[in-house]
Length: 140
Image (cartoon, rainbow, N blue to C red; front, side, top):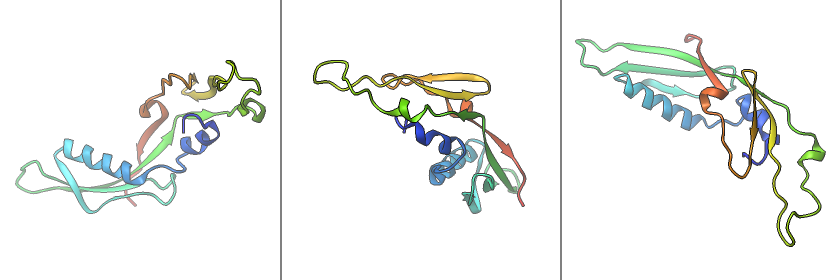
């Protein structure tokens, strides 16, 4: 996906996320906090705005287990202005005889007012915490 910046805007808005992987991470986080999934466990949202619903029960050895449910919404912290179509087309002349043209750095990603330029040959990418924040929205 890194070399296809035309897909970045959808990713940053939560379109096409991997709900199964996100729920697996929620389960790991629950275990770190002496809890396990309960009931419906982790329910991926129908849309990014709906948020994930998670139900956990404590496993910490207390006299009684406690159960909690919450809804977490992933909020984008970044915007992406894709380069114009003319900038996405490869150069017509290769940089070396018989070789492929060098990919241009990808600009247009801004996270919390910090501009990122991605070098396709050696991508230094923002972390998930640079891209998103998670807001607890209660369980409805």
